[in-house]
Image 1 (cartoon, one colour):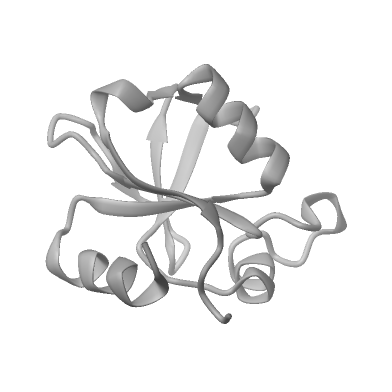
Image 2 (cartoon, rainbow, N blue to C red):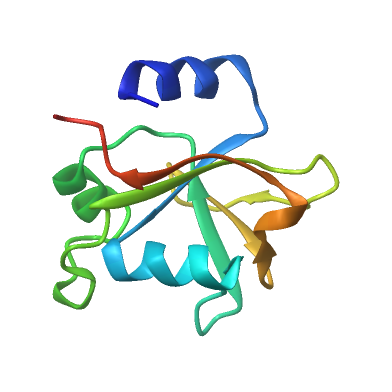
Length: 116
């Protein structure tokens, strides 16, 4: 799936979201079949197609601890039963607790195609 196809899905389907991560994070997600929450108990998503540098700036606030994140993405169509909440951040949504991939539709998992 390329960036144009992902953008089309994001525009056409309100249940499609992107989870930005790095290569190691994506590998772990796919091996475990889970997106585990952060220390605050949240898993974050967006519907914005950012390049890696833009994701690092806009989502990870250019924090050195998050260097490299945004290099890989997971595009999912969330099950309509998933309670996803808009955060106070302009771009982010979140769910509480672990997201099980088998309960949702993974549309793309790989290198971030935006900005290529």
